Image (tube, rainbow over all chains, first blue to last red; front, side, top):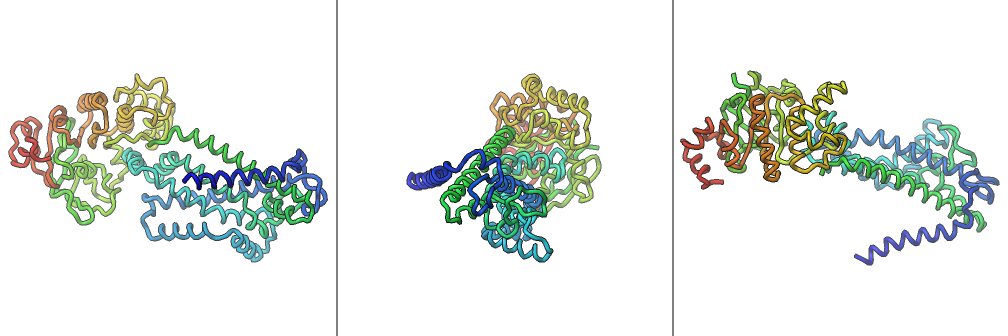
Length: 269
Length: 250
């Protein structure tokens, strides 16, 4: 047991160490405040602000879309609605399978759909592909949380004459809120860090995101491209971009932790 | 006309019969205790009165439960209105995941009370009625989950009273409480019985003797005996009642 704990902690420490060791020399204020100069592939000057904002737009956009699509699914999967039906079982199975599909497949799928509709690589395309990646993770994680809500708690709401919908929105949702935040965070982390699904769908650019229909840069792809160059200085910048991505995810998880703790006070055990 | 009148009530769970031909009138503005050994159908009978039994899987109900002359088992009955009439206290208190104030205001809000002043009055009145007001008046915004179990049960009582029910149903409402809190809840119920019809499931015989005006004794899903408490407790007619009261069956 201690061995596996050490492996986990060691992995994290190792990743952090390599990223910081290789990336710190290239990490400066210009990295986070400027767009790239001299092209994303060969440029040794400027920064990755285009990729930072692009990634944030993609991550938040896809997380919001997955939440909007996922919540009704999760509420439907409750016992009070369709939770005992065959359709619910099928939905859970579908979500589990979707969870396991590699993100490059979603990227290819999104690409085909975009071709069909005559769209080109764009922020919108990236958000759609990432939504597909995030939806199963979020829905399934929230489903587990909502299933943990005690039946007696719902009963006490029903006993006051509340309808199913009132009970779901006012009681179940509040009870499940802290766990739901964790589920959202999980999906966000997966989405913002995913390179394969946005490769074809969002494309890459040296410019800041300007419209839903234009291509956007993203941090994972910044790492990917910069690491692929033959120049050590640019490779360093890849590690620096990786460190920035890490910090972004860290900030978002800290904020959601704080929020979860705030709502946890109300949770009934 | 009694508030609650049960006629030929049968309840089946997955084909197994939990209640057999129950016919009984529950007197108004008194405390009725449903007693009997565990698994005899006490809770099932109670949950039939506000259709909470609908929430159980694979349940089938026949017969009639008349409340104010209306058969509430009729599928066209509006269960939300019915349940508003019947306050429920469960075995273990489950406060809602919100503040003390919002717990009491929850019922009135879903039934359409919006005005702040009105809600304030309801909350104070109900918390006073469940003798919790003095303990929580300074922290109405605090989470209800932070209260002690005894306070939580009184909060659940206040919450039930807030929708202005005519009947209070209690499913062993003191069994999870410490003796002092249990005593407080019992005292509140005795004081409230003038205004409400109280139906109480209990497996504590002494509690039934302390509180009940009317007693219903169930055994293996059958209604064995019912009548005024004094009569049933001092002079039970049926052998099974005698055995149960004598402590031979439990």
